Image (cartoon, rainbow, N blue to C red; front, side, top):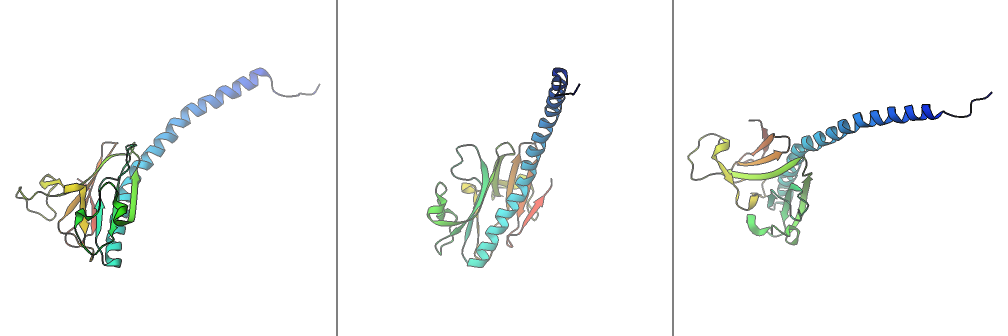
Length: 188
């Protein structure tokens, strides 16, 4: 007598084992994807700021770095660097809602809302007397318009701070050093 297939019991056992393996592995994979999104957010910030600084130096024009992307109706947050199309260097030359209308996009990063809840750009508070280079975190306030300006030579007027609030409870801090415009990640 030849065997022509599997019995119902064998198929049932195979289905149960497959279901158990899927139930165990799916949450692990989803957690790994989420962790990767969270970890990638910091390197994306560094990429956007460094590309903005390099574009300013290469073109000898100003770059505005915005701490929140336009068109974010779905909750996506991010950071963008826009090269000014004109010769003026006013941080508010770039329209917040439609920045591409009077600039060229250097870099635009979007961070998944499940990974990052907010990106904030902070500047030293002129009212508080703080010493140190850069000033301590408590000496900062929100930068007007959630933005800052990179001059044509790649420098900035103040030691700005970029704060990335991650959904895992960790806050990444980056200091944009004045006047060089270099970016350094800071652990607090």
